[in-house]
Image (cartoon, rainbow, N blue to C red):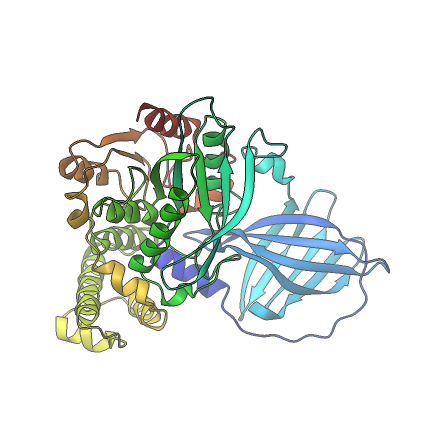
Amino acid sequence: MKFITMNRLLKYYVLSLTAILMSATQVYGLTGSWRGDLDLGQMKLPLVFNFSETVDGTTQCTLDSPSQGAKGIPATVTYCSADSVSLTCGVIGATYNGKIASEEIKGSFTQRGYSFPLTLSPESPIEERRPQTPKPPFPYSVTDTTFAAPDGAIMSATLTLPNRPASGKIPAVVMVTGSGPQNRDEELMDHRPFAVIADHLARNGIASLRYDDRGTGKSDGNFLTATTDTLKGDAVSAVSFLRSIPALGPIGVLGHSEGGTIAFMMGAEDIPDFIVSLAGMAVSGKETLMRQNSRGLDKVGITGTDKENSLRLIDALFDTMTGQQRKGISSPVDIDSLAAASGIAVNPLILSSLKMTQQMRTPWLDAVIGLNPRNYLKKIKCPVLALNGDKDVQVEPDNLTVIKNLVPQAETMLMPGLNHLMQHAVTGEMSEYGEIRETISPEVLDAIVQFISRL
């Protein structure tokens, strides 16, 4: 689950919104996409500069931040020659100046007074970087469609149907994305895992429906006011839509991360005929967040007593937010007063970051902290397949133990060498996601098909 952690906050800080206005001049000659990593010490932030040339020879540029899902940020090229380029990105208050060589642009990225060395190299074609992404023509039908959510929001979706068998009905799944607003392909850093899964299922006789999250892509609704319960309602409507198609038989829910938790919530109400959970959270939201924050503190070098005190304060903050949520209120927590009341001294960096979380609070965050999937798991009666990678650092592998203990009929599979996105990984850290060519492990795809085919 893509919870707000220290590392994520640092990423937002680097791309904070501060406008810088500079005059533009006519510039010429640089084309293509060029990629580099900002080295921020404890983490790296990939950036992609997309250069193009107009008919009159003027060089233009947009900026992508793949790890944040930001694409097409407008930039102005202020100078470009055979050996150098300068540009400004007013939306994020940044500038870049580099020297051009045949296979690299070596320069400096500056923002809000901070300067980072940044060397750019030509970006390889998407087909090479993401070889699993399906390409037409397809041996199955793909149809854009819509369905209505409980609050009337129109959800935009893709229905993928395999060729109909001579006899019997086609099994199908509704795909539910992980946390955060995502499109129907659960696209992240040019990976499109739900498109890859849909393709593999269809080639093996299984239908699927995947949809843009509310307020995302072509779907209506407001994601910022949604909670996990709201998103569950959207998924329930998607199942109802599939049940209206005569050619389809058993209807399941395939959820990744928070989507897996939503599948468990639906299973407790006997809505799906089966469940496939890919790194679904089984422990409470608070436990998951505490683990993520503990790892985040390690990564920024906060250890020992400083770490213990920070975690105590974070724990107290989560309890306060949960108490507010139960009372139906949401007011900013005074972090300084909370620390004083707890009698602990906390690193100023942590205090500042926690204050930022209060500025970024949403109904989803308040609700997920108090969410305990165990309450749903023990009510599930349908078949369940639950998979976790043993290198998952977001939803840790011991979630499988909780699932197996509470859902005796569940098939649980610990996948060696896989991360949270079900990719073969080295460390499992989020910083690797975009660097891995594989979108999803073939072993995972095969396990899903074998499970559904046995039903």
